[in-house]
Image (tube, helix red, strand yellow):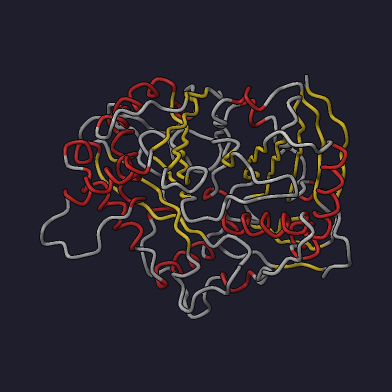
Length: 457
């Protein structure tokens, strides 16, 4: 049984700058949904009432510093939005649950996990949607979960991690010491360009299954989430395997752990989906532009500074060639993300009459926006994000991860708890491909059973 105890609108504790602020061209193509994140904390001697008060007051103080999260969005035409800084606040919900933390198993993104994060009615006008939603849940065992939803248009992973870290400092009674850089105009398309100077396949419709006219059948297929763990030794084994497959004449730096794992996931998915040999397939990779721009973006830039790049191949090439081939394709896509390419990407967005088709809506079965499922994948890495250590005064989390995976083909890779060199891989695939994916995923590494299969249909 779940009992709603209280709902609060939390406004900034002090007066904050008002008025309208532009969103960057990078922000404008983000999903109109909230990114769901979940934290679990072990049983502690803290009442729900006490936790609520700590979170309310600290969030109010944090919104003084991160005041854009307390505002509203408004449509301005062409599928674009503008931010109104009006200090109307974030939503905070307090819940008691009869469940125990052990009931959630490996914490994979199931429907039960999603229920610990505030839901949103996206049929409401955009200006009625809080940009930040928080739910604190106290379990019968004494444990706590903190579920957050931040609108994709407002933050990327690093920005969200920065906000949570500073909020947690305030909750612990410490002084925040790393203010965000809030001027998003530095990621507007450059004025010296009048048109994109590169082709941008990341904004093109992704490949269809051979013989299909659209993605609608694939969007509608039953899908489920799966979480797998790779130990440090297994990750290193994949990295070694990818680098052994590199050409002897290739003098570039070795493939990274992430490039090896990304290539392995892509190959495994192609095998599991049983594509025809000539099936075109893409791997969309999310890269951080902060240190790729010239000059680099100011420290602690708050907004969307990530860009999608696309690796392209055929399933036949991926499954018949060694792992180094797939990792090399991932490397090539990542290396495309130069300062010039990223500026061209911003200009591509600026030149669009309507940016709506370039958003994906991150909801299962949704027929709107871009689709990155079968025969394709989209992978987001949290491997370098400071995602752990969110201590709000009752100790550090025992788990942090995505609270939901919205569509077939979406993959998250993030470090294991304790930063022991392990990786967690959480993804959503069509149910008919789950068993085969597990088999092929584990085929080239030591025998490793997945943490679980988590249907969240």
